[in-house]
Length: 162
Image (cartoon, rainbow, N blue to C red; front, top):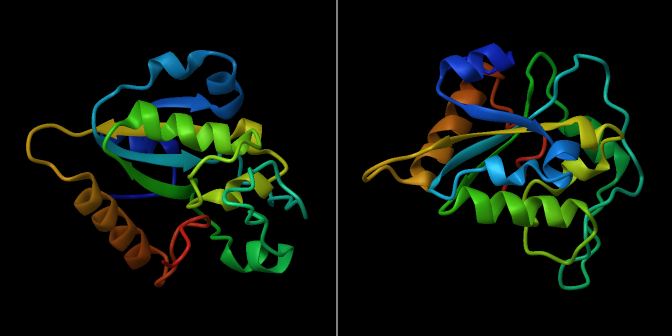
């Protein structure tokens, strides 16, 4: 799979492509409730602007913000993908992620660095609902491995090493 453009993701069967602002504004009903994988994508190739303090919530009283230097070091050029995730319920998991970005103390610690981007509200979520015996964790791992192969061992920007 190619990770350069939104068209590449559409060709791979991803759907949605709804902005954070749109999802916060009520379009979250478009997210399916089934299991699947999802991505956070950035539409512009412009250099990112990192915020010292983002909008992410303090989960279990832990500061979600990371130093700007770490954000810059994690940035991956020449891709629209900034996060790859998995869900047993896309609707529930993406809802948690979006609540976290609104400063709520929700357990979506992974991917928190997107909320330190100045254009976080313009980011888009897309998803691929899985059927049958497909395993979201397996699919996420495979997508990240493919990404790493294309980008010299680097993970998507907000996919921290566990």
